[in-house]
Image 1 (cartoon, helix red, strand yellow):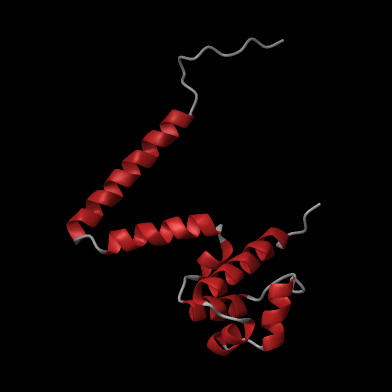
Image 2: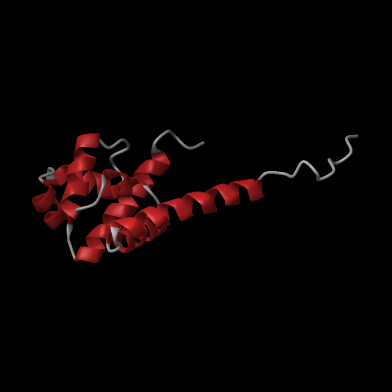
Length: 126
């Protein structure tokens, strides 16, 4: 059985490693840039740390220049969000608003498609 926080720590460790690799950083670089104790960085990367303190995660996120929640989500999702945000930031305010309204309508339509139709016959119960 998985312990609470276990998957979160795996995700945190994977994200730290991916962000370090993207920047060509070693653990010593992360220590220097974040101000986190070298033992703390090593313990997190090795899996020895079972529950990371939020202040440590915040320092690491700040060193990478990413929001804290990016440290705790799937890297693929993070990459998509970063790409969308970069596009969004380059749009004029009017186009940003239009994009938000379109995305909201699209999400609502998608939710409606997921809901079973009232017209669909229900399976007979045995």
